[in-house]
Image 1 (cartoon, rainbow, N blue to C red):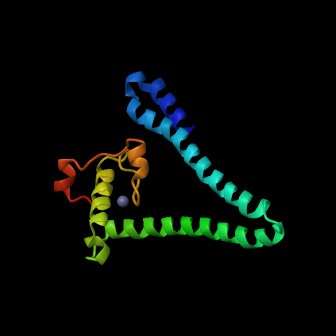
Image 2: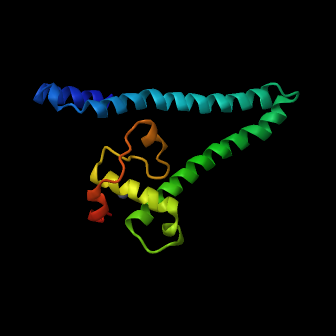
Image 3: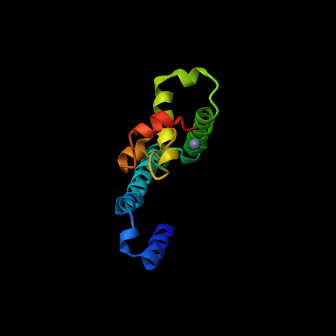
Length: 151
Ligand SMILES: [Zn+2]
């Protein structure tokens, strides 16, 4: 919603020509894609609960097993993503010849992230650029990033 207010203010101040419609389409797509992805994950979790807990002969006992497992799974996924984001981002900005910096994957996401610092509305993902591919916010490394040594 903030984006709509910003666009509305921009149009009021400088006219329709100031709006980057490609970026606006990407933002609008994120409003649709993100909830759909969240719904799919939620449906999978509900399916597991339904099959393993609600239809179990002893629901209380099944819940005592499955609910903590599912909570641990979600917390682990959040923590793993957050730690990966922080560590990889640190390695990108403070290189120190760590083993991970020599991997092809790191070199690829490092370049991906460098482009982000040159083009702040592009290459928004640091760890797994899936959303950049889906939302078409990915920008391949332009020549300026290759020579700029941006960190
Ligand atoms: Zn950065």
